[in-house]
Length: 119
Length: 113
Image (cartoon, rainbow over all chains, first blue to last red; front, top):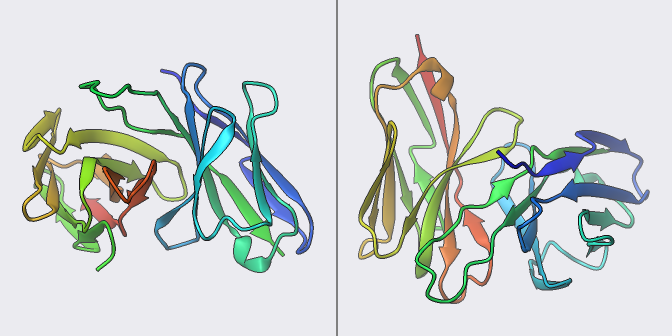
C-alpha cells in the first residue's frame, strides 16, 4: 500500500533555529497538507497546497512558516525561527483529486509524523 | 462546542465488547471521516461517509451519519486489545470549511483483556 513518508521521525532543535520537515507524498496525489498535534491536544490544520501554491492556511501558519514542493516529489515545511511552543508532532498528508461530481471521496493518507522538540 | 467534538473523551471496555464513539460537528460537510491514532504514532484513515449516506460498514466498523443532528457515531464490534488507540472524527467542509479536514478532540479507547 502506498505510504506518505516523513523525515526525520524526531528532531530536536534550539529555540530560534530554522528547521525543515520533509515529506514524500504518494506519487499520484495532488493535494498536500501539513497538520500538527501538540502533545495531548487535537490535530490542527496548518496549510494545504495544490498546484504549486498554498490553497489555504490557518492562523497558526504565520510568517515563520513556509512550504515548498521543490522537485515534484518532496513537500517541505520550514519553520524559520522556532519557538518553544512549536514543539509538536507534525503530520504531512496527501490525497487524490476528485473532480466535481465524482462520486468517490478519498480519505487522506497521513505520514507517521515528525516529533519536533524545541529546547 | 468546536467543530468535531467526540464523546466520550475516554472509554474503557473489556475485549469482546462493542465500543461506540460519537462525534458532533457544527458546519455543513461534504463527508466525515474517522481516523485512528496509536499512542505517539500517525493517523490512519479508517472509514469515510459522505453527507448523502446514513450508514457505512467496513469489517468490524460501523459508521452512522445524521446530518440533521450534525452527528456521527463509530461502532467497533467485538473489540480487541489491539483496538486500543485514540479515535478522531474529521469533517471535510462543503462551504466555509474550505479545502481542509478539521479534526475533533478524539476519544481514547482502551480495550482490556
